[in-house]
Length: 172
Image (cartoon, rainbow, N blue to C red):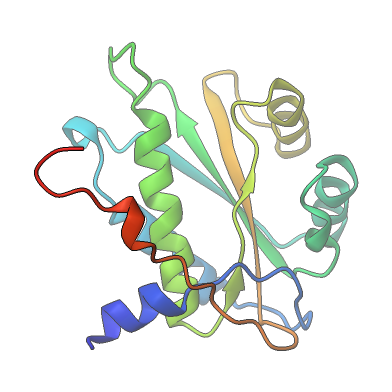
């Protein structure tokens, strides 16, 4: 099996962290991986907010209902869509583009020995408002998610998700 496939199959959602600091270089490398994702018409409508400030992480943890692990995480990346870069597409492909960037970040974290988990923000208006307020996002930027990042604490195992019944050949 290739290293790429090993990383994909070993990726897991990590919600418990040691608290050990994650260097700016590693965080930038994660965002670099995010920016390597494909995007519709190559518009690259993403923007990333890297957060390492403890009070900001704690505020997000207090206010976002499913991001309590931010209390332990030494860092987070908010993956956002910059609508000023999204072109004239009414379909909102920024969501798919930023989702691809998010998956790249999650896979890169796994490959680097870090733990991470996708915590959803968009399309929940209450969560969008919280993240926009806490991170000071401009009107044209919408947060898709917040990814807590750190060194995993304890044992985390990937889940087996392959189900042959979800495969259809040639037609349904």
